[in-house]
Length: 259
Ligand SMILES: [Zn+2]
Image (tube, rainbow, N blue to C red; front, side, top):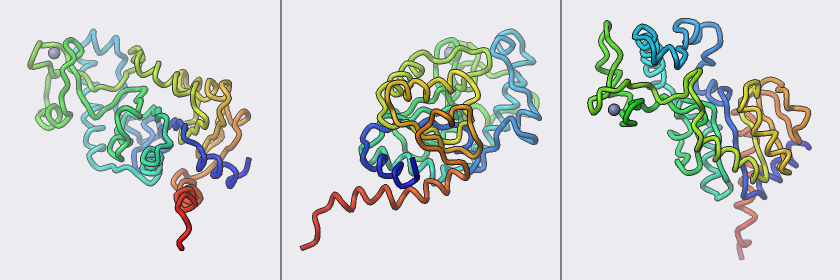
């Protein structure tokens, strides 16, 4: 299906699910952490088992997260984050599933009940023992050069950034919500995900099998391009910019003609 046809279908739907990955945030200046020069080449991510077992692994976790915290202070949602938010304002958004832990969808204004953060978020720190939540600033701003891993002021348990680490199980409620949205979607739009890892790659397949129109907007080809109804390779912001006037026609055509 061509661009105009896709825009027409989007305009008419009230049951759209977006699924976003790192590519949507690179245009906000969040580097892909795996890329050369990314944070992960400087600080290795820590396996969850190691985090639980070893103080030096925990310190390594906090060094990585402190660097990420400093970076996240400077980044802002971009046109694509805001465009997805507009679908919610128009009553067209069934749900937004993201693999990103940068919190930019929330900052753009997407509401909590429409958002599943599959891999958690770095915009929160939690106690692994009692679940108490801390704002990142409370933890990172006071972290000295030489530190021991921070613990909970309530129960003494280990604190950890609220992202899902390697080796840590995926949050069940989030997975169920994402699954259910995928089954119900009329249109399922992948934005900025290379769809290389499970379970991420399973959701578009679930949606497609359940009869959804599947669209993939990504810089590079993905393994699911062959089963998609609409594919756009290239800059994500540009694609949303071109979509915007076509989508907002819906509002114009809904108004009664001026007499
Ligand atoms: Zn606690």
